[in-house]
Length: 331
View 1 (cartoon, helix red, strand yellow):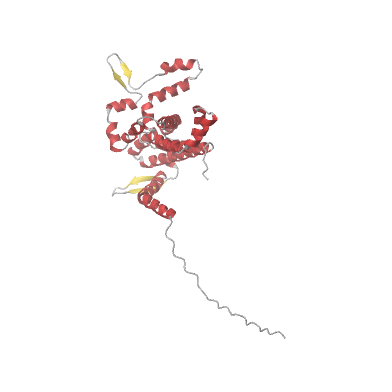
View 2 (cartoon, rainbow, N blue to C red):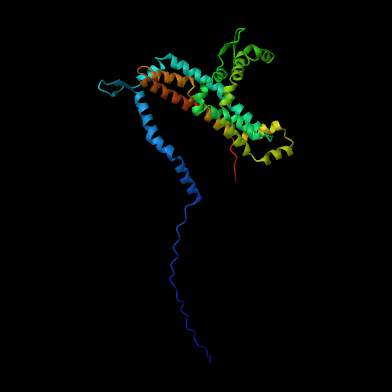
């Protein structure tokens, strides 16, 4: 006979514990940066919505309309369709001629400014004594050509002679050009043995005589290129030296691909800066039409034609250069 007793099952009490409520997380760093960014651009956004958008809408309406001044004051706007655009493109040959010449100047100036700013940025990125001073010297023309200083400087006779390749003064022995550093005959002998045509010769002459204007318009691009050059890791150049690559090979294989995004940015910036400058021939022509009699509608149509051409040029340049842009992957 087994003296075993059955064990009673032990009841386990379950305690209903509710999960603690999660504390509200504080705003992340990304959200704080985004909020700070919107605060920073808020004045521009407010000005765009309140000031610029109404002006743009009125400009579009004026380009498709005809303004009639009322005798009691005010004006009446009558829609005339594409009449102003037809007059700008077909009825005003001076506008088309000025537009074509302005685009030709753009095609000549943009490569010169981008190449010059890249060349100077590479030089100023080298380790040398007084590097910060030289950088400031090359950026000073950008400051002097803006705002009130630029207006005061525009009345300077010496500056006008330096920036105008057609000015001349009487030196007593005859009339000599002031700013023509070289002429076509001075460098023609350099290209005779190279079998170079007269078109390239005239282009080189124009660039050398316009070096003052090129330097003035290369300051911002130079800073952008400097920022791009300083972002390149020195270890890449050290590995090139170990492999036996020359400085010329490192420039084309390392420097140019690394700064190719800056080349795209500077090309677009230079195009916009050149096409919207107050000294641009097309801008001056449209301004003269605007100040003329009943020129508000015609000048508005010319402005929008010019705007569309600028957009097409920027899109073409951006699409072409984007094919050669190298973006470094950061894992």
